[in-house]
Image (tube, rainbow, N blue to C red; front, side):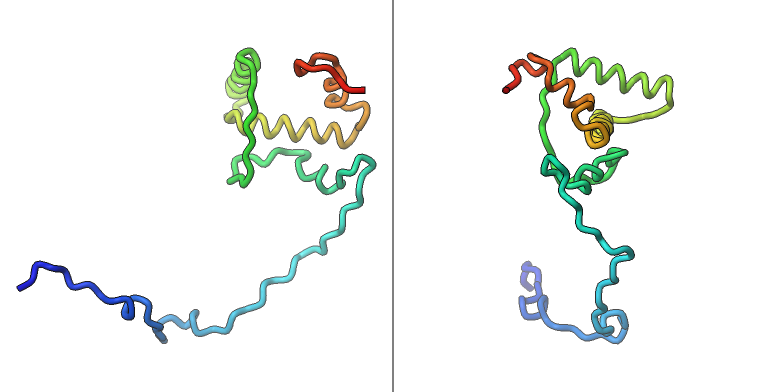
Length: 140
């Protein structure tokens, strides 16, 4: 008697099977469902962004879902401490448990919504115009 295990061959593993035990497999393929609402084409905004793009991040961040894109942002030690203090304050005083990623996504959503609504007068434009806010100078 051989000590070798008897394994099936490729023809047995990849053979076509037909079974009436699974009627769902015998059904013809169905067409995908039609969209519930027609999708309107976004009109370009004055700065080249589309309104739909501007609204996609606002008014709320995406929350705790699986994300398909990732960026890396470097912050100073003071900024990280401030973010952690804000996160702990949200937890202690407002019963909101959030991680740093969600905090950043919500902050970005708020900032982009303000930019979309106020343009030149937005907090983003005003802060980016400040010379040296990011260690560099503004270009004219």
